[in-house]
Length: 283
Image 1 (cartoon, rainbow, N blue to C red):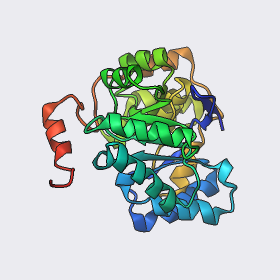
Image 2 (image 1 turned 180 degrees about the vertical axis):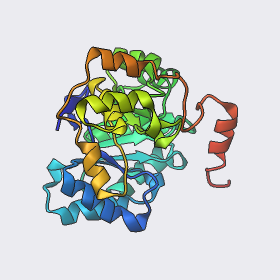
Image 3 (image 1 turned 90 degrees about the horizontal axis):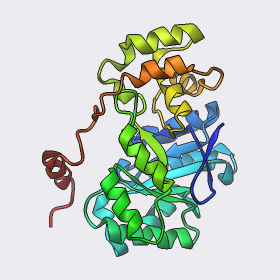
């Protein structure tokens, strides 16, 4: 598996398995299948309520802990220094591990600065091998990096062929922040599975349109976490390292970029911000 070296020297698998919207009841089985077909990075979050399933699957797999790269995220209701600090320990307990390979702040809302201080402390204590953010736009992560000791190592943000984050990527690269995608298959939206550009390129290599879309992100040095509950599809998604897209292919796929979110509207949209606030516990 190809790896991406983070700005602290940690090597992170470039491809992993995501468990967003995988039910707690199904999570252990899905992660076990993913590990069996060859994934060695699992992405979860406190908000997914399935960290226990991830931990159980890894423990029962027999695979050495240092061979599986675990990613989780602090949910915004746990932001603020004290709450974030306690929630990191709770995530460790649920996943039955002494350390999390990468811990992210899940959203750019609430007291993200207090939460970031808790992440910095956990990183220095060895509870996290790397720390970063998720759904942060350039103004968010530039400000966070400028006003704290540690620059985020990763930014996980909606990224797929229709939203390639070209402008945001420039600022991530400037700060040495690795680009990680959630929703690399666009959650099937915008005609993703029937897109003729992807399908026609795939025919040249005996690959599907989704495999071409994932390969495109790999060649752009984006970290990806495609999700499927079907073992055969997990294996299919992983089978993208035996071909290489040409410069012509890459240019054709670049033209699919709309520059706008497809799965979730902009985090700068006041209505989206209002919706996220409804997810917080009532005071």
